Length: 295
Length: 295
Figure 1 (cartoon, rainbow over the protein chains, first blue to last red):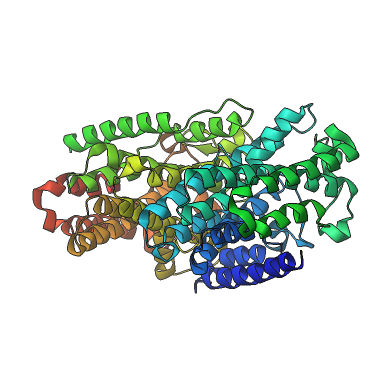
Figure 2: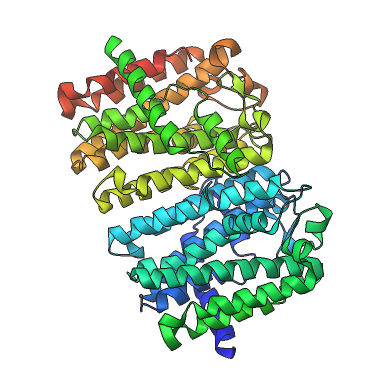
């Protein structure tokens, strides 16, 4: 697991360096929206999704400068989703990663536009020739990301999340909600490695199954952290799911049940990687890391 | 000009039919966000940008089912920009095309998500094989749209617009603002026809110059309509630029000066189309139509 910690740190540094060179301040007044994009992008975070892109692409010996670009695009989409989700009309969170949310640090209008700008730039990064010499690979990346992020993916999941406050939902519905809200982008991160690496169907299915279980394990752990964690450690409000009357894996399965389920899913995720043999060690370690993380 | 009116109506019908088949309601609760996407997409509008895509593509005999898809993508981006611009934290407009804005008809959170969903789907539509058999053309479309719509384009223009309320700006800055806010997407609409049609550089430059002047003529006319128009005819609030202390072409050039400038630009736009000869008649007519439109 030491290797994992080092690799996580190294890929986070590399992706941040690339993001820094991609999100360029213009000279006019509109620089403000790019400042907000940069503020939210560089507010920290473990860069788990970028790591998934890079580790998946490494299975197919994809050139690092290509996988890093896709990793940066995924992080832009993730950051945009946080910026919009934090808005007063959405989850109304003033704090994100221990710092004021974008709409607090700037203002609501700038936060909306910063999210829009990040989402748009993600597609610009993917479509650029630097991401792959094969236009077919670039369009497949754009298509897959758009499907994962759109109204039948992440945007749809956030809509469901807002609509299920204060109403009773069962584990089946929570699972579908989370598959859309967080699972789809995590799945894309793994799928992107396979697309870049021209993986065969068998390999794609394996990575998809891994991502599916990993995403759920991740979400259950998030719910556990919200229920058990401290604001100080998490850098955001805790207990907010309960305050909001939101059904979570913890409210539905109990603390013990949720811990057990996360562990089961993480183990199951790892077994899907069998076809890749020892090459997939880092991704296997990640599945365990995800459920043991403190924040 | 009768031909133009007919063509405008026919392409509007065709693009609406395609949008209807593209924006599909899912079965789950998240259907609400897609309902809002559809509500705003089908709230009317002249579909000028789709027409520009199709008329430009027609110059190169592009197959209609391809240009229609790009037209639909451009209209999705245009609609998303209206939905977000109307939000209370932005321009705070309750009325759009004579109907309640999305955040009034639904709610703010749904409006933010509907905009996000439309923007994302635009890239999905472009990246799909149905748009062009050539992956290189599809990536070029994605790249160009992302640049036109992002923080160095439309999003940046909206940021500038918000920042220039109640401060003095000159014609140079207003022009740059409008080139970003509305000009970039109009330019993309024309450029897209050239990309689909594999136009040479000479033809691209001609279309770009046309789009540039057309975009400004369009904006000046918008300012004139806001200063002179009635809410009933426009289907939205009027005089709002003045109320907001916003510099416009009218406040900077006066009513007569603005009318003159719009006419000059429309004529200049038409002359850029000379290389295309009589094939570009519809686009030339459009430039005149744009400055004479009542709404």
